[in-house]
Image 1 (cartoon, rainbow, N blue to C red):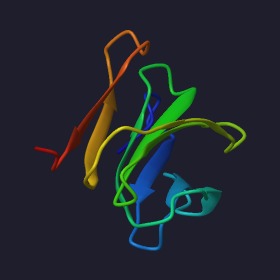
Image 2 (spheres, rainbow, N blue to C red):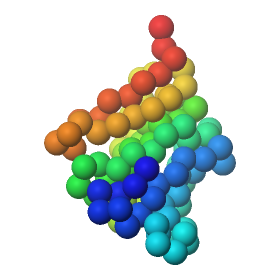
Image 3 (cartoon, rainbow, N blue to C red):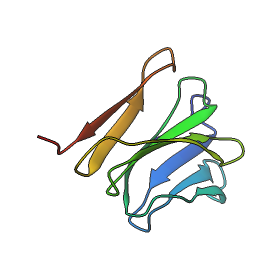
Length: 100
């Protein structure tokens, strides 16, 4: 997905990372390391300051988009986390999983 200002692109990968790209030059500017399994989705917060990722390791992670630091790991699912997104005000995160 694209950052709110359309200057950056965020991708999820089977190599257990998410990557931040300069949308103009297509150069990787940051890699988010920390998941133990593939990353299914990655999204920017509405203000672009944070990123949330969803992974096959049954977690979602909240990241600082500027430093690449993991702010928090969200646990609780018993199956892969398929996707995660921010609320419109950026204060909450919603995750989707294969849980029953």
